[in-house]
Every structure is written in structure tokens, then in C-alpha cells.
Length: 310
Ligand SMILES: Cc1cc2nc3c(=O)[nH]c(=O)nc-3n(C[C@H](O)[C@H](O)[C@H](O)COP(=O)(O)O)c2cc1C
Image 1 (cartoon, rainbow, N blue to C red):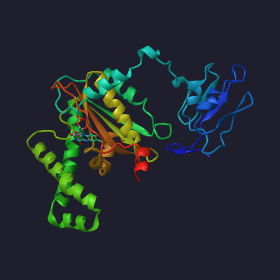
Image 2 (image 1 turned 90 degrees about the horizontal axis):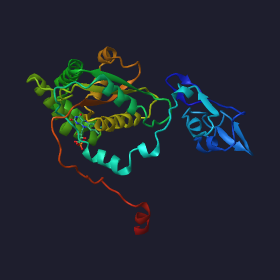
Image 3 (image 1 turned 180 degrees about the horizontal axis):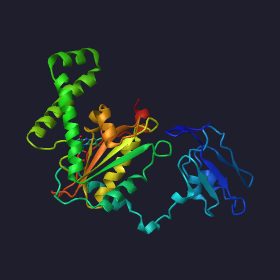
Image 4 (image 1 turned 45 degrees about the horizontal axis):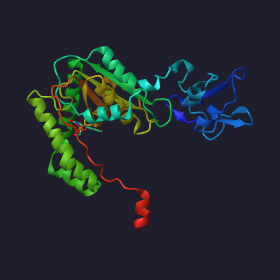
């Protein structure tokens, strides 16, 4: 049995080159589903185990002699790349410095983002983990202000339409009576004021959706994606952008209105049945930040301590 994806229920197909395999067991050690196991000094392959080979490719990446190849589920051995030397990988200090310096940037210099830089951000984002391979996330790239402005205008128009029927006492009364309290509160305190702000800004020629950014990435997900996949990919893109001297902001307010508009999904090329999840705006920042911030999580507790206190 294979895990379903947008192209059906297909298994990955691991093949071991028995002539070069040294029986070290690395492939079996890294296989998350138990498709590859060791029996004595031989590697057994059984794609009928649990939900079969998900084509994560870990066996290919761990095999010291390159004796494993996996195909299927959009994976192929030619996607493998050589790893940079450990000394060329970011240290914990470097990574933390990058994290601390990143801010959500909403004012951009006039310069465009070169196509190669945008492509590099997208390629870096594609190295992110996903719930189950292969990627069920797609990216639509908006290069240049005219394209980004068009998307921002479409989102603002959609908010204007939403406000026409929602922004009154009767509809909000119904929401209060029948929706969950948290949904009502979110509409009252955030979505309606946000919509009003976006629409009013639009009328005065401002873009409060995509902040007149020179580039944007729209991440969309198929029905088979884990809900977190697009957000994780977007986070990777954001950090990659930071490392390339770009500023970025994740824009959550664009996807929900877009998802309601079939005409816009078609216009922008979101595949059938896929849904917009999140937008990342990109550009060279105007501001220079001289401080970072360490915000505490809502709670960080040591589980054992907590159990002891009870
Ligand atoms: C999932 C998500 C959605 C967001 N949506 C928006 C948005 O629609 N508009 C916006 O201006 N900022 C948006 N942001 C940016 C946050 O407001 C920002 O991360 C937060 O204010 C903290 O600022 P910092 O990123 O500079 O630390 C979003 C961030 C995340 C993670």
C-alpha cells in the first residue's frame, strides 16, 4: 500500500546494486518505514511493509558506495547533490546571528530583485522538509512590481467585496450567535479592521497587502500536503532571502481571500484542487535595524519538572 499523493497511490522503488553493496546497513538504519531491513549481512527490500516506500531518498543519501537508487513518487537519483564540507556549513552562531537579524520588512528600495536571486531563494526553500515526500507544495513567482501590484490589487478587491456583506451588525450578530467564540473574536478584532485598512489604503493609492514589494512568492498546497508544509517552505525561503541581503515578510492575509476566488486561482495558475497557503514578499530593505529581539514563547516547560510538581 502506498501513501496517496496528487499523482495517485504510487510507491517509491528502491533498488540495491548487489555487486557494489558492502552490507554496511546504512540504508536500513535510515529507512523510516522499514521497507529496507538487514537480514544477516543482506539488505532486504519489501515495499509492502506499512505504507511502503515514501521515496524520502535517505537510503540513497546514506549509502557510502552509491549502491542504492530510488525512483518513483517524483524522486530520481539525479536529484542527489554532493554535500558541502562541514566547515562550509553554517555554524550555530552564524545561524543564530541570521535569525536574530531577520525582521519582517515592509518598506523596500526601488531596485528589482534579480531573477537569479529569486530563483536561489526558491531553490533553498525546496530543501525544506515536508510531511510525506514528494512536495505537494507549489510556488508561483511574481517578478517585478507590476506583477506584485496586480496580485495586491486583486486581494484588496476581494477584501472590499467581503466587507460589503460582512461589515454590518446583522452579519456579525449571526457570526456571534453561530460561530465559535474565537472565530467571532478574530473577525471582530482582526479580520474586519484589517480588511477596512487594506481597502482604505488602496483607495489612497497605498498597498497594505504586499507593501509594493518588487517580488513575491505564492506558496500553494495540494489536498495531500500536510498543512504545515507550505509554511515551513516559506520559512526556509525567508531565511534564505535574509542570507542574500533581502528583506521579506510572510503575508498571511492574501491567501484566504484568494482561495475564495476561482477566477483568481485560474488567473494565477494555482493548480486545480490546490489552495494558496502563504505569500512571501521580497525586496531590498529601506531600514537598517540596529537591534534584534528575543521574544519568549508562550510557555517553555520541562515536562519532567511539571510531572514532579503535580
Ligand atoms: C504566518 C504569518 C503570517 C503573517 N501575515 C502577515 C500579513 O498578512 N501582513 C503583515 O504585514 N505581516 C504578516 N506577518 C508578519 C508578522 O506580523 C511579523 O512576523 C511579526 O510582527 C513579528 O515581526 P518580525 O518578523 O520582524 O519579528 C506574518 C507572519 C507570519 C509568520
